[in-house]
Image (cartoon, rainbow over all chains, first blue to last red; front, side):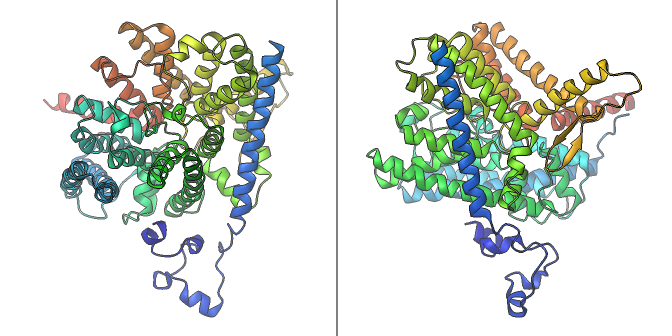
Length: 74
Length: 505
């Protein structure tokens, strides 16, 4: 849905504002092997997503442990 | 000196508000499609009327000024403030036509609660609400949560540059994640797509394992994912999260709540590979410290009650409600009456504090926000150190928020000012509840829940509640979402216009 809204595939949306509108789909750049400043900036996003999920699990686990200890003391 | 808006400014404000209303009309097509697919013919008609009226209002407003009319920062503030009101007024049209609301005001309350990602509900017989209306209720979370302004910008309404940034800043989002606001909006939508996609898949699997059919599982998964990721609080069932009785459901929804309460700039840093920011950031640290302190108090508080039979249940339910409250989500796994009947005392105070503090800035969470709490704590430390140091000593206090920064008077006073305004709003709403005859603890709980855009309820929010209190809670939800500045801008503009008219007459 988002790809349709923006008019190009998701991984392509990180291009910067300097990309000419006529090359919206990146055809020219792919053909000529041109790399823009911000291309690949979010290449590690799946790792980032996993790191966030792991951080949430650690926070939830630690909070549960602390609450359990507090409840045990009471 | 107050600057009175000129006629052309008012026209520009209405023009851009109209564009947002038009974008809303376009999103109403989604529940219309759901109604047609589900063969719900009456709700389909509700959305045909809803789209028509909303589009008509949008077109009339847009025609107030020519396309491309420039807009300044002050007018951007006013558009943002009006966007939530306009969205609630037109978003309520299909809801009131559903027959599940006592009045148009109740439907407006529900829409305002949805768009501000609060989650307080006035819908009647929710368990028999159509798929289309349920999808629309939860879409209001998604649209409002990502910011009406940002949402509109992301579908490229054709407004770029300074004016667009004015709208974005007016919304209480002061982080410039990407070089321009359109890219920022797109980034926000992409993070949303990733988490909503992940949430829908996982919750569908959980719902299927609970014995639901595929269609129903998908619907429930979509509704609960948007409600949790956007820290909203609506649910497709009247029992909310209690309906599922599933530890997996609770674990996944807590993950979504935590992701939703995280600053979008922090998401961007982690997704770029700057993962150490998670450990150094003042907001991440404040949220962690808050959660740990409140967890200790929650454990102590619930241990003294008879609500839960085992320690495991205390932890599972207690932590769920703690994160639901602090993230501003409002999902609950108990009956409303159990807040004061079962929780009581210390555990209730913990939930109230968690709601009041809120999540991170530049997220869909409400409340005072972790950034301000962190800055106020650092500021107090700074002033205390200065008070006991020799007069000639220069005392500085630093914090990390995407870069190393120093606490100064302006930052400290701004954080304090907004915190005081939140506390004042919490207290004013509580007094109103008490005046209407509700017990003080319940009135305070409900007021904070509304102003901090949480959505947990002790049962005060019900179709039969006084009309005055409905209006007060709607105002609290609106003011809390806008973080006061845009609200003050609109009040000041109206007052300035009235004063000028008086001086001319």
